[in-house]
Structures are given as C-alpha cells and as structure tokens.
Image 1: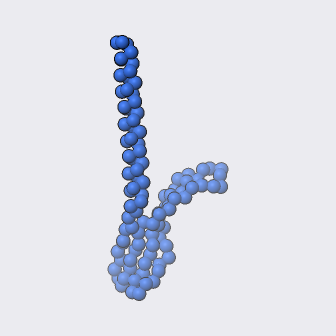
Image 2: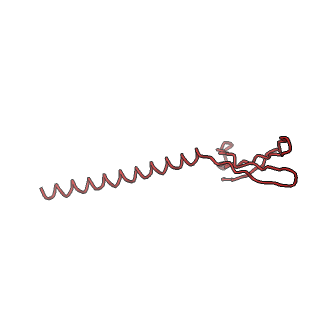
Length: 98
C-alpha cells in the first residue's frame, strides 16, 4: 500500500511568532508484512504573527541534484546503447562487403 501524507507538527513559540513545521512522508507497505519503507522530508514552515499567517516553503537542492544525476545517467546509457548498435551495424555491413 502506498500512502502520501502531509503533517503539521507542534507549534513552537519564538518571541512574537508561532512556528509550525510541516513535513511530507511517503509510506510503502506490502500486504502481509510488518515492515515497510518510509521516506520523509520537510516541506515548509507556517509562520503565525498576530492575525497573519504565511507559509515559508523549504526547497531541497539535494533532491534536484539527485534527479539531475539520475537523468544524466539514463541519457548516457541510452547514448552508449545507440552508439554500440551503430558500431555493430557497421561491422556487419563491412563483413558482408569484404
């Protein structure tokens, strides 16, 4: 079972502000097993002061770097596969003519 959940934490008082952390988790559990996988990360922070409330989003540059590396690896694999096919085709054509 796959479950995506966004949860707000306990408010933290800091001078005139109330800070509420927000996290998102992705849970994967398989039926019949007691074990599973949980991936969690901070999403942002609610900032309350007087009667105003605003949301400060937390960006995760490490995640973007990981996606970039994955994409670069896939592109390199596809390029190597295509070039090896071309080389194999050239060898086959050369053997027929020679």
